[in-house]
Figure (cartoon, rainbow, N blue to C red):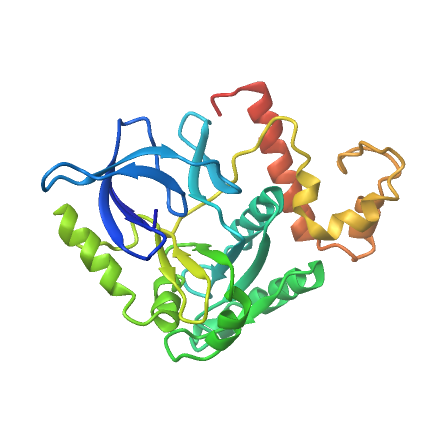
Length: 296
């Protein structure tokens, strides 16, 4: 599935032909990137999506009841987009990077709008982004509005199924427009066919890249957290923890109150960012609360 607008879906076959579809039943929740089985509709009615094929990877979040909600499927790489305006929030970036590690996919940080005067005011942004570089993530500096730095993204996304994620207003759609000629064509076809008005990135859409690979434009968020399984080890979501964690006294160290914790020692020595460690603690406490009360 390459796009969705409400219950209206756009499905592409192996030859690149597109078909307007609807899912069979309300419980069948198709997301962007899904591979599906579908049948043609009768007369002029839309085709019917009958089944979702097994997913390789899923980007998730908890719904209002704490249950898993799938946002996109079969993704190979997350590109977390940030900008000095709206207010730079590294904790959202951290949580997306954790999601990528738990999914087992690659991730990168794209710092957009570097042309803005606000960049000078966001004094912590360059330093925090260097933390991501030290942790092992590619960090790209771009100005999609002026077309600078986008060639780095082209090289990074080639041959993969990628998804752009991040806060509302950081310029994900501008990046799509810079990388994909006539990106609005898909938007227009789908919103016109559904009769629900013009799309403003309220649902994910998959675009084919001219140089190979795919790029999913996802809706912007005010906040994000990955859906966490009760038994998941959140420390694997922080790349810089992995090496020192091998020297912790306890093999099942959670890097919180345990004595002789090598991760906490690395934080004290400045080898791990205190802010990144604080982000880990916040997510861990959230997971503990979830274990105590599944409704959270």
